[in-house]
Image (cartoon, rainbow, N blue to C red):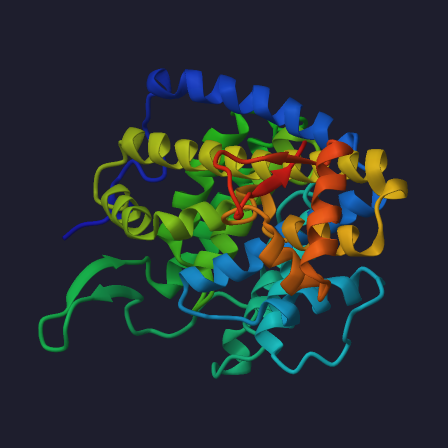
Length: 371
């Protein structure tokens, strides 16, 4: 099998944007809505929302590579690096603290040009607890063995892709970095829409596969950098979360786009749609936080301690809602109160228009929160 980097025209990718024009337009629309929505939140809610997104991205970009991290380790590391309370500077999992460091650096340096030094820094963050030699961490791969992506049972393995040899990496990455900076939307020579640039950049970087390990996580960070530069602020969604949900198709599309042909229209359409899907999922989360903030602003002073506890618990379920709604039995379990008190509190919440009655009647009347 021959690969894209062996094509004499490499890396002159060819693609059509006809089929994604509408998605690009919708993405731009939703970007404005998201920025406007988060601008309505109080500072503490903005911080919490951004941390939630970084934690989700860190967990999912690691999960795609088969690494399962503990959420609280990642969250604590991010909060510690931001100088916030409720953080632990002694998180023992170096992978968690390293990926947390990467998340923060990608967002804090998004408007800076890409450089070899920055990529090496990111690699050191990702590989902080690796078994590889020091000379292989924070450097282009040097192993002369072919860098191959292999899948299948032992004895019947199939090579899906083979990356350029080490002696080509310096020149290949110089060309990639130059292209990435030339396509930067504000100062670059070539203007590409953010999602389109992210799609090409991710494939271009993954095709070179310049590191001994960690290429996927760094490649997704590069896509995020491209999207953030396009809108002039860190993106408000987790791209890796959506990729993880479509992991099998993601790898299949990468494989197809890495073949000898440089025609990548199908890959571009797939990746741009992934970005838009991720944005819509994040929009739901941010609008939920906005509604929650408005709810407490309107009702915080008129609820008793039991009612506040129950509603806080219901909000923990996020935008998907509290499964099955709230009823007297659940209320009693959460607060430890009597049935009479639970019935009275629920009636009060209904009267104050904090709750509304879900369909159905009888002794098991269920309620949900009014937004």
